[in-house]
Image (tube, rainbow, N blue to C red; front, side):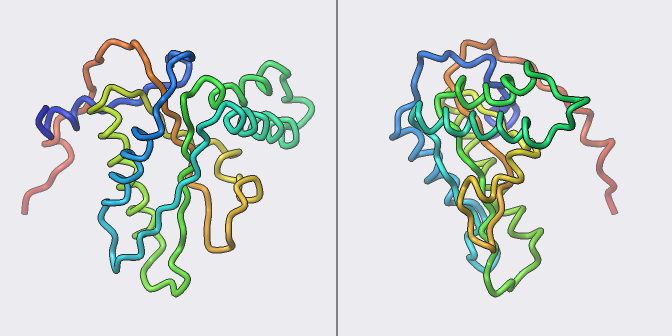
Length: 188
């Protein structure tokens, strides 16, 4: 498949569509991470870090964290037992979950947004790799994920930018939806 087709086929495929009994091989996860490692990086800060929740036990622990976060941070008048249980379901439905972490350059030698952009490009490399091999994935940025500093044991110069859910799926290929590029470009 050529790069243009690959980019246009990239989609978010959510954990509810994953085939639960179809594991993701560690070698494939290592390939995703290696491709992430080749993202552009200004001043070679390589600000991406990842924590992989691959085993059923680690995905269950992550699910428990997400459910507990909902329970602890939802006002009583808005609390729903069903929503609490559902908040922890995605890791359990996934074949793996990768915590996406920004490791800020300790010298702050460039603006933070450049390092965030580099991490996003690393995720795009993983996403395109998933598309190429037929693996479903989705980048979730729930408040629980963004505030998972203690759960993940992050350093002071690190923060979680979300969770990358991965799973085998049987979804049909969907047509992409984008407005014409001419609506978004000014030529000078």
